[in-house]
Length: 354
Image 1 (spheres, rainbow, N blue to C red):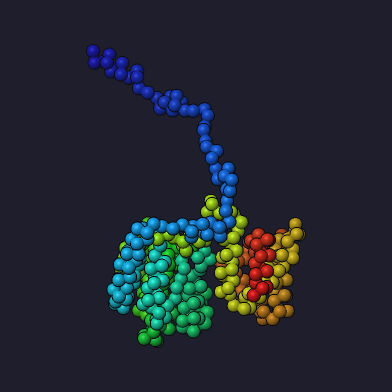
Image 2: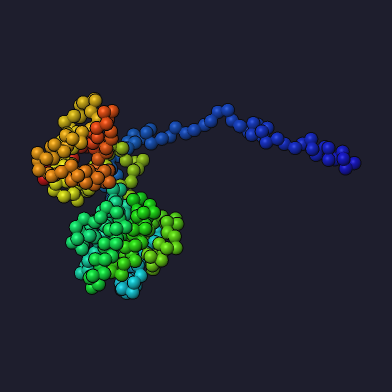
């Protein structure tokens, strides 16, 4: 009786292939409701930002946000005390902390030496930050090429001036350009210097995974939950969006910001590449401006004195993604600016009006 029942049950064991075959659909249905079907599928970046800025919150919501911000402002004396005791401040929580850190800078640190770093800026490099400390704060010139040697120099210089304190404010310590191991190692070393006090914000939920025990000890953070519920307007200003036309406006905006921070000679060199590229805009075989031609033009304009000086300037352009370099078939180096010709012409006209 048992063997018959066992045999009967075995006859009804389903096969997985048969199950999926019977439930499979030969026709795959997908929606064709895409953004391209809208009457205005894309908007210009400035138009999107303008529309977003016009959105008004309710009086109740705005009142609650103001009450939260006032509560956080009451923490300012505590934060200053914590910083003076050798700890560093880290803000986390939902919403932008940009406004809060700026308020602390304006209300508490207005008489102090402060360096503000926007970690969300797309062309930020760790060398930019180190150069700002060595040249602007310490007046010691450009930092060494090796970032760890630069930190060694900064540490030695600050040891000689123990009465001088630098407050380093980093908006988005977990920004796209600061998430790599090298950048976090440099930042943690700077935070360990007794004269340097770090105030930073983070937004990504997995940011703590960037730090091992050594980095956490160096950062020596005092963690503060500052949920502001404010929009990430500044932090997302350089992000691509499906609602924005892919016209290169963000690239142009980034180029303007970086160009304004260059030295006079660097700007002159870059404008030579801009004009050369626009001059050859209609040339189908154009591959870029040859390095030798750029060097010759720079010598004539007294912008550089040697090949090495021009190479150093080009390295800065390449780091900021203002210029791309590639080898042609004959092995010569060709330099191009990765932006649409019309936008490049607009950039040139803007600079010539100044």
